[in-house]
Length: 314
Image (cartoon, rainbow, N blue to C red; front, top):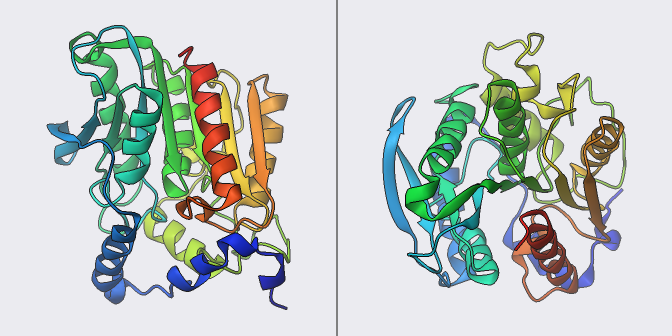
């Protein structure tokens, strides 16, 4: 049964723009190229990035640095991780989100160009993301940033990586984070597979589907068996202990494939004593926020910016 009737009418054009993708390893170069081109419709970015190159675990690692007011000191900052199901996307093509957030909040945002699966499986993308975060914290004074007011953020796979890196930072001695801002985060590797805890008939028909999700997770996992102490880094929902994590904001759509895993993560964060704010947008499928004129996307932007303002003491 189709769930099209549940989609917010203002978001319906998105379903034609971003059709569900069927993935195969041999098709990834083409799919990646198509994905890069798809984001061109969002137009120019309001704030250009400076590309900084640092030493990463797998070689040179690019950080896109969006700074609305260079020369200032003692500022909060955000560390951004782009989405793409662990297998597609880039910081280069997905500049619109971090650029607009830096412009709107008046604070710098760093966006990391992490390695993608399946060429680079777990923990390679996570190590890249943690390395970039540590670079930001270690160079806070030079960048004009207050190291006590750094937040991490991401969308979809980027949200899942942000949640995983927040756990890594907690477990590996830092850097300390002031906030995690997660947009429909990809948290649970079981979703859509035979061990999926969720059987919600209203989610996951559009944009990012159950087969897409399983392909992305399997590409990332490779031969790794998520039974050791790193399992929460790989798939944040598997973490047995969520205590000690930074305050969290989560925004998701009511018909997004990740709706149930996002709500469950919120429940467990609350049980672990982590302050958390949750927003569910009715009729919103995955990636609904790329339709900026839709009321749901405007509400999402308002809520995200308000949370960042509060959590980073702007």
